[in-house]
Length: 187
Image (cartoon, rainbow, N blue to C red; front, side, top):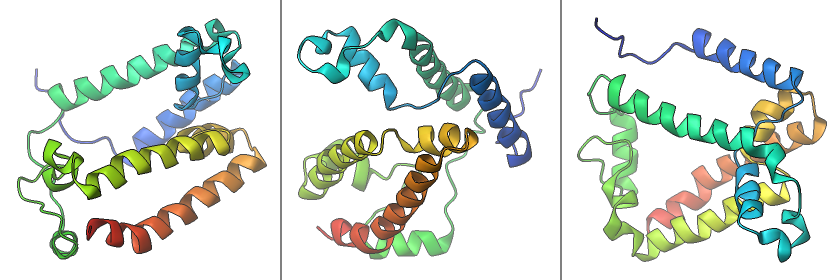
């Protein structure tokens, strides 16, 4: 039996996300990936050192199972449901990336010049991975959740703080893409 190896169309994937969100709301659960870091730290005993991690982590085990399912689903999709062809970028994107010093040869979704082992130990790699990772973690904590938690769970629960956070995420993403990223890529 031949498996279909094309991406699901938006009109299938979108409603499936909505169904999952309605089920989670029905059972009083909130979705978000960054909350799992707090749960893992609580499991590791961080509650002895910081009050933030002192909570009943057993009530959040379902979310860790959700993350495990996300990782497993990503692996299964990439190994068994992909068509084997590399990502096809438009010529306009390739020329823009090349102008910024990003080598797109190889056709992978993660260019080696940005995400390879050698790139990690460059000034650009340190800025992007370490400093960028810190900002993402700090931002998720400061905003009370990550982009997936606010944009998917918070908006479907009609929470105004989530709407404000999502607007902030988009403004920050646009500023990063059009102003800061070109500077960082030239390092």
